[in-house]
Length: 547
Image (cartoon, rainbow, N blue to C red; front, side, top):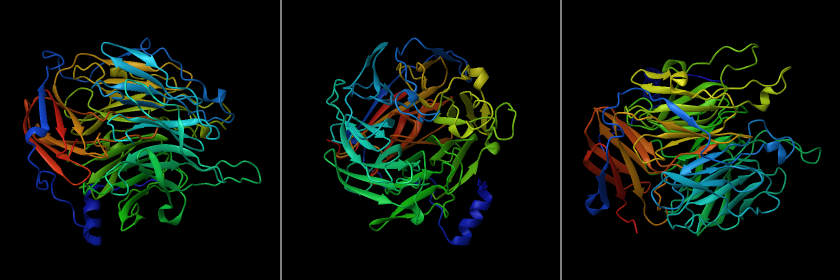
């Protein structure tokens, strides 16, 4: 059951239970002196005389000459919505954003960005036997060389392709598997330092086991699995039952909502039970989903983070059967939810009470027009839950909402983004290097589409982080930047369900010429503060202990 809690009621509840609201984000822990650990490079405005306003996104289907196969060609009983996973990140360390497009029976096809052009690269095709088809994948640096490995989630386990640089990947090797009943049903991957040893570990999220006859009956939920990593191998696999019960989910993330340096596991419901938010207590994990109002039961399928309400704390928007659900942070301590109140409404009416008017999969919060407010992109695709209707399940269009002071407003038609073909993955990033974000969408049985962002006004700051040994790509770090009389915040993440956003963080600014302050909250509790950053520019910040 869904519920919506407003900020005034949230404040009252905090008073009743005796929780303390964190200080305003303007007040940071004692920062380190950035010294030589900061490099600022001024950049030109994308189009200095361009009018401000929401951009027209121009689709280009000629860039990526690869078709993502129909999943039914690889395994029987494939979901209508499987396929089309997508990541956008720098895979070779050259500073340009690259892409990965997911397949089912072989590793993802990669697009190496060689501005203004690029080339498609196929890693070694061999996969370990017994793990089943690939469900999603992520780019995570697990051997501390600042180059992300490709981590593949299969139906029955996880494999990894080691990254040797220059787009040279080793054949896949098994990282973890669960062959005994109920076999693993991996749906989502995310990374963070889960055991406090300074290097990255993996959160493995699963859906329920569908069943294989009387000897292997179906189960509704599965444990969360934490893969504690050491030197690119699993040192320990830990199973967690939130609240003592298995959980079924299509997307879970490692995040730090209150910026206390201790990661949390935020696992969104897929309609088969409540969601969860697990925090570390001693040597274990405790589910505080009910206390923090993260236990909504809905059909979450993709997620993205950003500062939706402009309070300097990280929010999450999650796709659903219906409009997206946004978890808005109350001072980093708990959530209140909003959809209609924030302008996220249903699409055109469809016949039949059982058919939702909009259905989302991939999500991306990104500032497409550099006005200082994150916009929300959603891909649409049918679902197997609608395949039992008398007619084939309906198509759902890709949608985009523009962010602003009063919430979101629909811009799908204005932007030219309303494609009705099934898409799951979506990612936004500055592929061309001009300060305006491009958008890529991908889906099964189709060629991925690049949406070129027309020349836009407004300035920007892009932030690249270099972390310490064990986490060279600074996964889990948050950046709070202040200009135009308001803060913005973003977090370096990895997998978010069907897609992965770049580690390079992008902030837009409508009129400001200088960012007064940039706070970097590193996962180990260190804080770096940079002041008076010119707009537009690129800022590279190194952790004090970065190699």
